[in-house]
Length: 249
Image 1 (tube, helix red, strand yellow):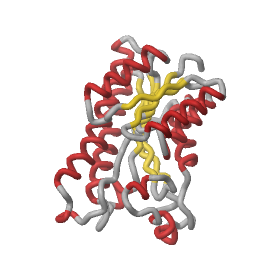
Image 2: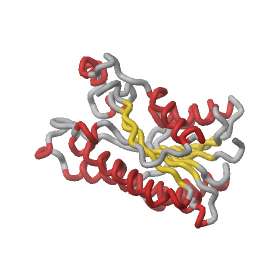
Image 3: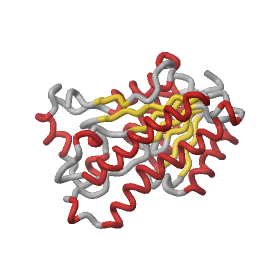
Image 4: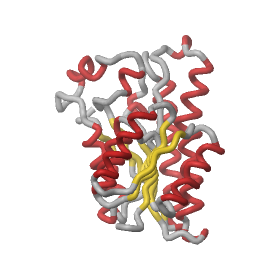
């Protein structure tokens, strides 16, 4: 596993941090980006290093082509050529009905959730694609059950952005399969992470719990387990999959 190098965008908290820790425990060198959560990112890296792993964290706006390219270049220099990508960086934007949504907030959601996915995927392709000198690899995009449920009265803008991520996943999987890259997505449902508090509804996981057939919110680690499986050789014939992780909802 010495040559396994994973990039996790938005890897400082929540699902991204769980993926970074779990991947490092499985032998990956891990580069994680963050936009504002510098201290949590530093803590994840220190935890990995204390356990004997290799990791780095770098501030990079996922919606910026220049910052995304610089982040991948730093991973190349310090950890080695990227072999796996988890496109996790994302925001919900404010809770809002469609007609009340600030267009600037919509621009930000689409820039980070959709454009950011494209930019990181582009950098990964340049390093992994067999026709470009790479040895292949795997990508997992972190989408959402909202892409199917729709987010009515709350996050239609967020749901729409994740619908785009789903379509990107299917299209990219077909384009990149002949070039040695598998592309899949996970679609988490109600997961107990910081995302709810950042959206201004810290009690959302508890309020929505009765709507989940399994009767509880999921954990970041449960999502990370599926992501790591999709990155592994155990899923070597799986590409273009959209895996729901929603407790039955």
